[in-house]
Amino acid sequence: MSQSTVTMLAGLLGKELLLAGQMLVTAESCTGGGLAYNITSIAGSSQWYERGFITYSNESKQQLLRVSTELLETYGAVSEAVATAMARGAIDNSQADFAVAITGIAGPDGGTDGKPVGTVCLARSVRQGDTKSTQLVFGGDRKQIREQAILIALQGLIDVVKASNS
Image 1 (cartoon, rainbow, N blue to C red):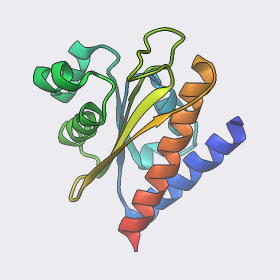
Image 2 (image 1 turned 180 degrees about the vertical axis):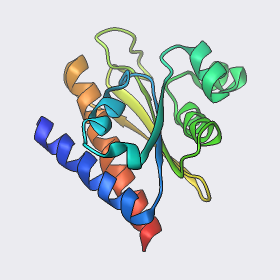
Image 3 (image 1 turned 60 degrees about the vertical axis):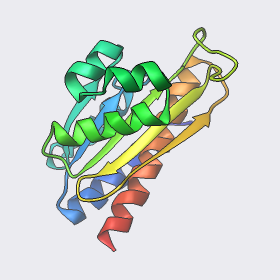
Image 4 (image 1 turned 90 degrees about the vertical axis):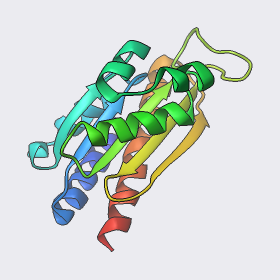
């Protein structure tokens, strides 16, 4: 993934949000703020990016996003259920209209048979609408897995915002 692709997608997302007059919030775990960094690299992003949560630990997911202990214990931090709760928690704890959440196993350790290294769960949420989640498994090293998650998150957000604008 090239940095220019991410920058282009972040800029396109910003244009779509500006067109809609709406704001974005992010909730990140395995990407450690990488999505927020790429978004805020766009000049003028303060017009459409409201805030970001970096919730790397389970405790931070619970405290900042109100992810329940039950969800974490039942499904694990890397699950569509937790990604969904993170996205809804980000919306509920912000003034934003759209949210994206990313949680995953970037490696090189931490994978299991059921959730190998490269497993990433993403959720996109609309304040006045649905929350949709997906689970993907990316190849590559830690950096590549994180970059792929950021790219997919941006692409998915563009689709969601465009759909809401039509």
